[in-house]
Length: 509
Ligand code: UN1
Image 1 (cartoon, rainbow, N blue to C red):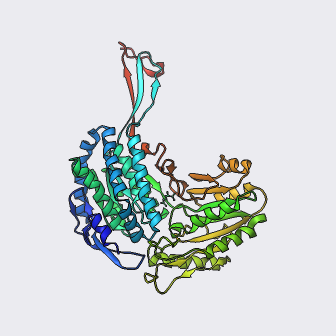
Image 2 (spheres, rainbow, N blue to C red):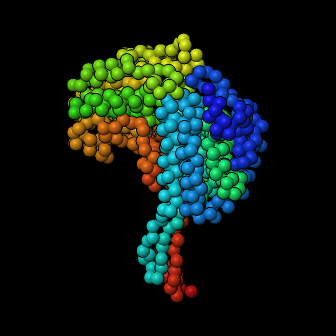
Image 3 (cartoon, protein in one colour):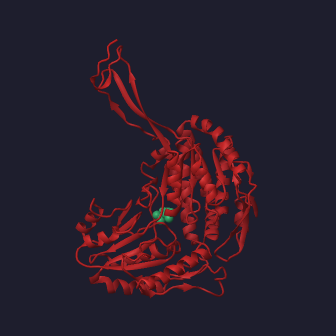
């Protein structure tokens, strides 16, 4: 089904999962990648042993000085070429993303578009790694700050965005002068191999050494090697809060840096003054897009009681239109979950909703029969719940949407929206300026992303992406996120003939 695309991407059916660039190796166990689309095996990728990992680190250590010495705009030029390659390969890579991960082809293409966008962004940024200049309190002194590369950056990414999230980190880290080591998800190893190959070809064509971009493959154990390794200055990790806590503690234990982008529990507040047509589009895409497996997926709708019944009806009607099936068929809205474990988690969540007293308005279920052989296809769910239920407080990576009713003023909705442990994305649907501004104020949403009249998912790469509380506090992608990939140095230069001390201190010899 995907043979032509794998060929175009230069991938065999049996691949080594460790790479320092042109060199590919890997002595560890083989991971079989099964497509959730049809349950078929796509290929096998060998995982990295500790020995393979150490080889990667050696290559990265020797490449980091070479790369850091290349002027930033020239590094940007390499990233520009990478972006061009992605443009050429957009269709084939998008298709592999769709087939290996299970998201719709449109969303697979969208993910590659995010990669292209961040490359463009990073190219421009490579000429803007600015620090401030500061007026010194001492005469004939100059103060300024510079940003220098950190060295080696480890990137741990999740299955749900198997290519884009790596590229946000990779493109910025590279223009910042860092070398990168990526551990992708063991659920989508071929996507990782494909991206590493594309970038490695660009580096090779520019006669750059091994070790600027590396790949390791494996489970949490490999992630732990990265987190524990003092040679890795920054570990950027995207995934579950459980994983992020382990990474954070391990990295903090050696006083390394981490950048965390973890779980969300994203809500849309729907006030009596919402545009309901826009609300339904935003909510449905947010809840069922990527089969509810985005960290920005809409999990909760907090609806004012006066419009509650109307929204409920429109939503349940809209859900009847959702076509579930092969994500490569553009007629379908929703593809499968990533694997049968995810289906189990979905089923357990439904049981918990019922046990805690929730009502299923759209009851869900696992799809069987022709086209659903992988056993990963599920029906989306809508449930009426209380925000305080334990299951509502938990991020379930599945298309389950919770309806929660609020009464009175918008402050009550905001309080409910904030009453979860996670703080990634949030939105309000309203045409009332006061409600919108309150939601965006310091007394409003406590999330890293707060939108008005847009859903919770689908952020553009130009903004800083990430969230608060258990989402981990990191910011990736746009705005000044690049600063996380560099170390700041404050420089003071004295061009006078004496040595005055700061704070007026006298020290006469
Ligand atoms: C993620 O789910 O980990 O805003 C990233 C969005 C995408 C990125 C999601 N641009 O939904």
